[in-house]
Image (cartoon, rainbow, N blue to C red; front, side):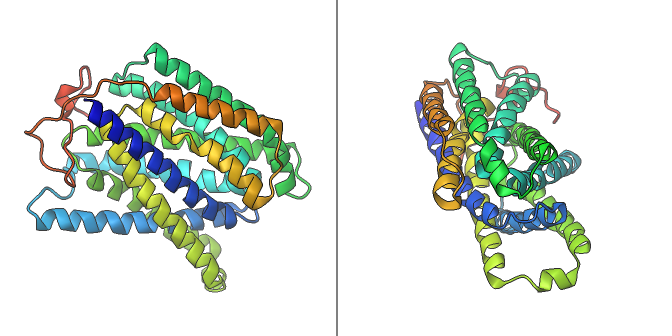
Length: 338
């Protein structure tokens, strides 16, 4: 249905905007290049999403709708949460402290696009049409070009940076992309079955808030946490709220579009992050940045082509007022998760 494509595209763009706002806050508190600090920031970022998710679950139960997912789904969701938080959020925050926005965001998305496409094809049996392959190739070229221009940003961020600093920045950003790519496929698999996206997200975000949080607290120590200024707490809270809004928007987009299409739309963050890095954080502006931005826009235009959507089934329970596509209508997809 054309309406699903339009709604999914709007949700994907909204998620990209919200993620960009959140990333600005995360970049502001990305200091020192310390892994323990990255754990702490990631846990605080996940807290608003977890609280919103539990609130939505309570609201669903009050309306007589299903709340928590089946017990058989708990282990896969918790494992996905661990991969998303430790492999995705923590590594991304660590990459920001080593490479900045202009390097970390493009590299993260290059691996999101690759891992999401491969897993989407293997697990969800999603087709890779020529138009989508061309759009993906254009976006991959965009992130490659932006990454070339971001090397100087990495050098300007860390005093005395050498090849090891650059390697850590690149490796952590790529690991982050793999974690996020796996998370996207899992969310797509869940929300196209009979699970609400609040039930899906609450497990993933709760792992960050209630597993990563205690680990970070032990690593940092109470004196260090108590010494944080109110401004730092507000920035982390704001970044978490923006991230939560983006998480719910992108989860709703996964109901309407394929993993590849959502990832491509969400990859507009690469251009916005590069511009923000130059304007707000004085990261170097280069011709690589300009060329990469143009390629990113071109990829978004290609990805906006018509995609056939699967019609929702009236037999599926209501999920936050949005119809859900049952897994049985997705050809070739097994009824188990991962």
